[in-house]
Image (cartoon, rainbow, N blue to C red; front, side):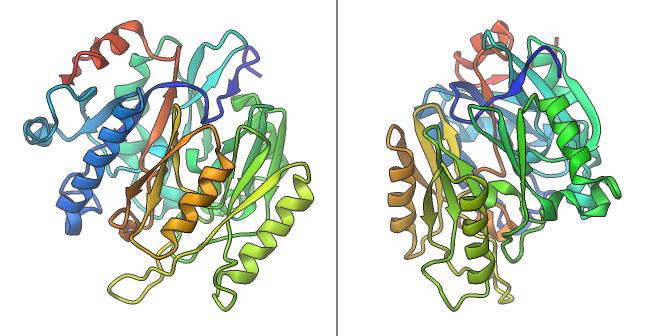
Length: 354
């Protein structure tokens, strides 16, 4: 392990959230204005909850983006080249030492097992983001995504076998080899790799952040399907809940309802309420304009009694098979250079690389 640094749980206090602004060459092209409106809502919610936004933006979109942001928005615009906007899976992960100092870590990103071109995304940390941090970026040659990794205060890491064992990520790498790699890079003390659970239409092969989330008080928020006993997901998600009870018996479970959302072609979309972002004292919760929204809000509030739940309409995000957590990556306190923090507090700024 590297200096006893451990991946920080998402409920640690944060200074910023990293996002990437949708542009016309991303998969958002058919719904570009709707997607951008959602991003502006997310940015406003992050700012309301005492964090700034580090926002990658295509150079040709900088002026237009500036015109859309309030002057006092705490946003640092970073002119950048990127394939798409799923920052959770290519933005750096932060590990913290015993003094609370954060350091950035990255794995290799290959578009969820070579499903999509991600050459530019894979370079984003080294090109644009690492230089903003106090500590040097550590890089692993192993393919892994932030959305595949969930950790608690005790260094217990969760992931899913279906995702890790896709041979297009790391060939025939074994689960025990993954455990060793995660303990080395992320400092985790225990790794549980779940065998059950997957949402139809999910390009990620079952990322943990669509399925199971830790809470600060020994809870598990699980994307279940109890509200739809005849749904094709029912048996698999019930098996996931049962597996979690077996593997994590000391944790209280909070079950989320499953909405039934399809696209214009009739294909099921992987709409998960578990794909929320913790931003200081708030839970930014994706909702979809469905009847299940109210039950999801209530369940997440029970699971996180010390947080405010802020629902954000993410119905456009799920059209591209992701949601709010997928587009974002939090940066804990004591990770960014003081100069970056100062700039973030000034309002909308354009990043000038040092």
